[in-house]
Image (cartoon, rainbow, N blue to C red; front, top):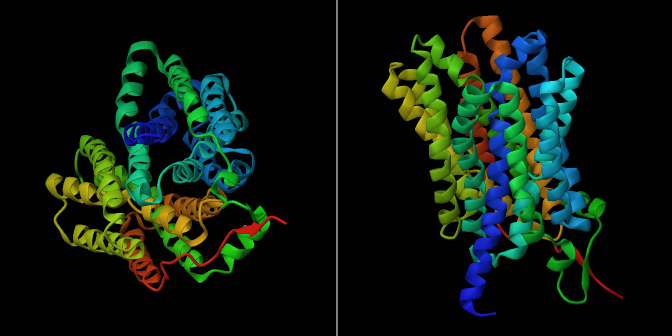
Length: 405
């Protein structure tokens, strides 16, 4: 294959993976716009509807290790195809749900589960198998940026559709848009057998998981990613409330979330570029340290609109820039044969942290009337994550294949 053809194939793979992440993540991230109309339509109350959304956060994480294991064995293409269809189905039927159980099934099980199947663990692993090793850093950065771009693009689209055709039809259109990523399932097809050297086959899923869980570097990586989930979910859920409690206009909260989404794209691409030049564990430590300093400065600074937007930009830059080096280290530790499974477990750790970040934010505010103690916890966790990544040995330590007799 000529160099031009290889370059074209590289971009086809990246477009397929980033486009899939943009459509599935973008659709999921617009669901908050439908919360109030759902409440008005069903009369269930915000607490019941929020339960469906919260369950979806946890289910998205729980789905990924299992989706990764299936992708490693039977191929990423089939998993991505199923995931996209489930996201579309769950989103299209949501307007017909009139009970809490129905909303949990449509939003929390079908949509979130489908998005987990077509999520980072499967997409990153599929990309890593199809991209030369020297280009993986930038490739994972581009795929990760796709999710942020989807949020940035589809949120205003959803708002315009709601205004133009009503919330129920708008939600169904958003679900159908996910089907645009179906061709990507063909581009990203393949399984772990493609990653094994000639004369070897991948070890079984259970053996791969046991081996990974005995590796200190993998455990430290997962612990750091737990902290990332705590940060991300707390900001995504409670930043508008933090801003409102500072006495600033509601519009500032919207602009702050937009800044996070925009600078997350910049951060993801920058991290992809940096991976080829510095140690991934050092980049992770630096990212968590920057978060700790940013939160501390924000707490001490006067709460003006300019301060809030600068803080949102800094946090946006670091928001999901941890994903490319985390995925890169999993691939470097164990290769790509079982990467979807092993990165899926790390993503589950991230979502458990996210569940706690979202839940504690509301609980602490309920008890104290302020978010200060959550910020203090946030700083301590960020410092801990910065330190726990430093001892990681950045080298391939385990071969996840065995010779065929």
